[in-house]
Each structure stands twice: as C-alpha cells, then as structure tokens.
Length: 566
Image: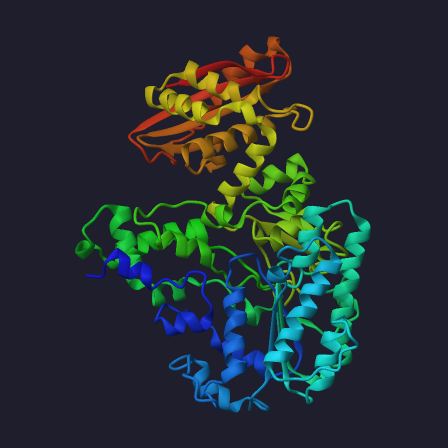
C-alpha cells in the first residue's frame, strides 16, 4: 500500500519540467502541444491565470529546444515515453543547437522600482546570457542595446525566445503606483520597444512563445508586434494548461484512492470505483469548471488546487488557489467597480454579459472591464460559446463562476468589503452554529441582524429583498463552509435560502418591508408561501427540516419579525 509520504513525493509542485522528469514525479503529458506549436515560426501568446502550469509549459519548451527529444549533445532525454517522442523528428528546422533565451519578467522585477530599473535588469540578463553563450557583443559602452546587439550577433533562425509573465511589469507597476501615469507610460514604451525589435528581427528567431495573465496584445504594447498569434481562447489549446477529469483519473489513481478513503473514512482496501467516482464528483464541484475555449467545449481543473488537495493528509476541501495566489490591489480595485447587482448575480450562479470587443481587445489595464479582469485572473470563466459553429454571430461573452472554490473566494472578498474589520466574524460563527443546532429562531434572528446592521449602507444600501438575501448568503456560507442555495427552484416555487448543516436542512423565506406597519402582514404572507409551496421538501437531505419566515424592515434596518413554519 502506498504511504502518504510516497504520494506526496510524486506530486510535481513548483518544479520545472526537467526536475519533474528527473525526479520521477508525475508529469501530465502536454507535449503534443509543444509539437504542434513548434511546427511554425509564428510568435505565440498564451494567457492563463496564476498557477495553472504556464511556467512548467515554458520550461518544457526550454528543455525541448536546448536538448531536443533525442538529445544531440549527450544529455539525457526527459521526453522518453511522452507523446512528442514519436512526433518531434517530423518538425522542420528542428536540428539544434539553438540560443534559448528564457526571460521571466516577474523574476526580473525583483527589487525594481521603476521602468529604468527593469531595463537595467533585463539588459544585464541578456548580457550574461550572451557571455555564457560565448557571444562577443559589440556594445557601445552601455548595456542599453544588449538585445539588439545579441540579435545582430547570431545567425538567422537560431534564437528561441521564451517570455514568461510578459505583463508583470505593467501589473506590478499599477499595483504599486496606480496613479503614476508617467511611470506607466515609461514601462509601456519599454515593452513596446522590446516587441518592436522582435518583429524587426523576426528572421533571427526559430521559435517565440510568450505567456502572461492578462491579454494586452491589442494595446500599444503589442500594436507594434502585431504578428503575435494569441492562442488563449482557441479550442485546440483549451486544455494546454490545467488538468481534465480524464487526466486526473489517468495520472493520479493512487492519490484519488487515498483521498477517497480519508474523505469517506474508509479503510483504503475497501475503497471501490464508486467511492472514487463520488470523490471525483465532489472535486469537480470544487475545482473543475474552468473554460478557456471559445467554443466552451473543454473544461479543466485548477492544477494548484488539485496538488494542494492531494497534499493535505486530512483531505479537506478548501480555497487553495485563492489562498495561494493572493489578492492583488489591481483585482480589488476592479472588483469594487462591479455593481451590487452584478456582484451578487455572479455569486448566485448567474452569468454576466460583456461585449465581445471589450473581452478580446481591452485598451489598457486601467480601462479593462472588471468582469474581463476577473476572467483573466481566474475568478470567472466562459459559460457559453462566443464564436464558432454554435454561436457564429454572437457579439457578447457570458462569464460566470467556474466552481465552488471561486464562489467561496468571491464571498470572502465581498465579505471583507462590506463588513467592517471590527465585525468579529469568529464570534458570529460560534453564535450562528449554536442557534442552528438549538433551532433557536430568536438567536438566529440576532445573528442575521448582526450582519445586516454592520453593512456599510452608503456603499451597500439594503434597498430590496435581494440585497438582504445576498448579504446573509455570503455571511452564512463563509461561516458554515456550506453551499447556500439562493432562489432554489422547487415544484411550486423558489425559496430564498436553503442549505444543509450537520443534521439540519435550513429553509428561510424573506420578505422586505419598507415600514414597520407592513411587517405583520408580510410575515404571514411568507409563512403561507412556505406552507403552500412546500419549500424544502424536495431539497431536504438531513433528518431535521427547519423552516423560517423572516421580514426585514427598511425603516428599522433589521429583521423585525421571524416565525418558525411547521
């Protein structure tokens, strides 16, 4: 039986392609994409959120162009038994050696405070590369022309350029000095000059591959280098990063069995294929659902979330990607621009529309639609085709939540936004759990009012029933770590809030009163609605069904009336 330590040792966390292969760790074979892209001399651009495997992909390209599939320099092959092993000899112009220049702009940004600092770091990196490659550059006494001199010193079709996180200089600068237009323009000009030189010296390159998080190819940065081909939403590269369900089953069978045993509290030898399938369905709900394919035909899991999930001995579903990727100032700034309606429309599982032109061709990071930035940073995903046979004339793009992890992550961001820091969330959690366990309606009413009375009314005015429902939905789902269902469709209508916690299925029906004089009548309407429409009957999964009718009064700014519905 495989031990947990052995399973951990097989996980390819934070490593380059060569280290993964050298150490015998699991590598999900994506080399067919390396082959198809290597067939052409076009410059390629791929954008994906953080921690989806872009750097591993870049490092696989680096290994491929440095040493080949059947190494021509005596180096051990790391491509043995991978798909590309039989394909690579068919690639034209694939005989090395090549000058493989790998630039990670996020690394070059370390200790940089300006465009000039970044320029210095970039040119120093190129000079060191040239020195290691035994190239004698005819510089002018400074290193400002190092890249141009490098390209003049090499033969045609001899350079492989790999640029990771090309947009990092712009995003990092905006996060540090959001209002410094001069600094932003200086960095933009620097990157523009870099890509102009690439286009002007295109004959020198055998292969160019560029990755980033945000799509800025139609801004001034890429307008000069408009030969770059963006494959980010192409259907044939929908799963170039991330892991499909089939790949998860194929490459991680032992990890799945171990996790299923701990999740279901079974001896590992008793875990059946049905148990594994049960776990897979739960993992799909939490970590699958990312779609980068414009035909909306391919879905992938978050790679980082899967690795973290398997790395937990206790097998716990959690917001691993969100916790590991952080909350950038740029993201929070754009998130604040979303309307109250759109924020909770997204959380409730609905899709939001953006214009196709805004989605494909944002002008600048500052002007990017907040929904588009949420997509590019991994919080939202494509929910319907926007181009191709299924929707050839579509001029809008539908975006929505990919999975429960992102639902929980956005709930946390919203909660931090609309509740004050002194709210005392830990105490609220304890009181809420006690109230539900004891089925104490008055105590639950007090818990709900603690949330509603703490909301910033200036920015989040509770002017309608849906606003009240949304605030409580966020607070309850975060407090109990449960999926709260809003407006659940049942045979005779839709209940406002439903969720399971421990041995209780909760149903809450809200009414919104503008004045105190309206509350009694509305409470009775809520009670009758729950009874007449049998709310919770088709949803209930727990032994105890607890149904409540509540009335929020705008005049009092709290829930004034509550009644248990028997």
